[in-house]
Image (cartoon, rainbow, N blue to C red; front, side, top):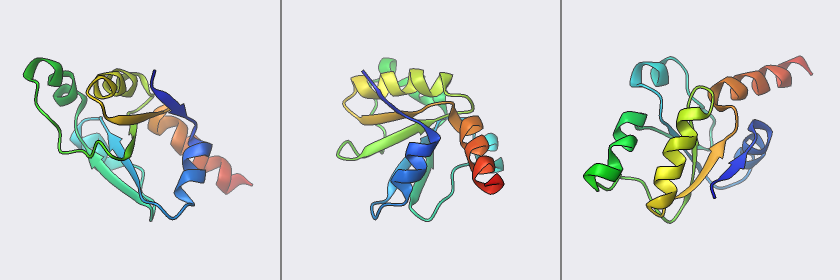
Length: 113
């Protein structure tokens, strides 16, 4: 079962000392338009098509299995599928609920306070 976190919980995680690895599974151009950028984020982009192909290819990704990886996409649906695949390959994955859309909304709510 893949762990899930809310944007608020992720924001809290980012206040810590440790770097947080965020895997964005959207297409490269979407990633370049906007992705989670915080001082403590190590952001990487591996499109979901690559991850969907992993089970057939048996390839390994250049991601650490020793660290937690927050997986995200636009709304969380593709990321959930990717997180399941990565989880089965023994990566420590956490799904960002609501994806980038929810993250942007959360950031906006912070500005409104």
